[in-house]
Length: 299
Image (cartoon, rainbow, N blue to C red; front, side, top):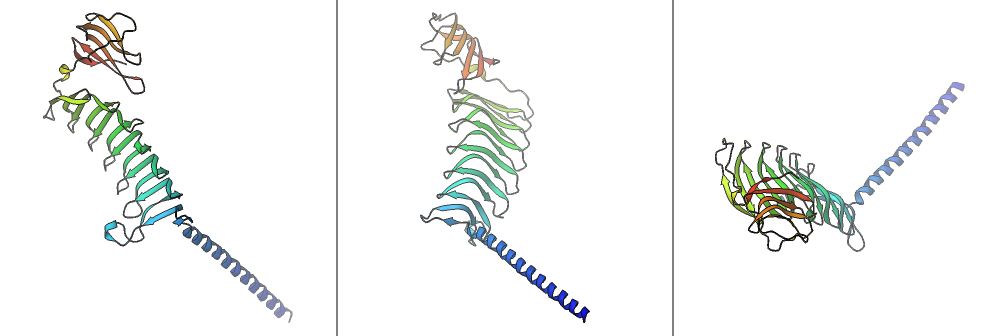
């Protein structure tokens, strides 16, 4: 009798424990389910004024014109008062591979961004400021080699040396921009690295060109003979008498040295021309001999 009573008590205890565990598990499961559904339903919400708020995920439709299948993720990010804000991600039609990742401020691209090919290889990276490129911009070929590299100023203009590349890594085209305008010369190259053409730039516009159609030819005729020093109409000499045929130092409107050397008939003959960027920093020195461009001097 004593053993039977003990067995009944043990069985009763186990039932109580099992019932408790089942109720506890069910409660936890419901809480987890509720939390998940709350997170789901919290997306794609609008406030009482009809403005989008919080996390939004856009999905494709079954229309073939969209390029995205039904319920395939197209893009996702956050809204504040109906304006894109923070990081947004766009996807390729597979809904998984990132196509564009960038930041928004008040519904406009702002800050760093990156684009990707459908195979996941980086396609482009740069930064936006006031809806314009700013800083370094780099584009890539599908094989990962650099295709283009340039710096942009605060106006969204290319500045300094700009280079385009073949898919094999060799430079294809290079030129220089100063204050948004072409400067010096434009050079193109064959795929093996030999110079293909050189074109002088005068007054911000392309001028005379010399070509080399033979990829195996290393040298190319110089085309500098037609570039002359800038003409001077009202020389600034800081009180020193200007000598039309003699040594002079000429200053620009910012009181920086512009031309320096021996002059002939009022124009630089043997000397240097100093070129400055929009920030006032010296970026290039041109050396002239016998009234024609000779070479670039050291900074």
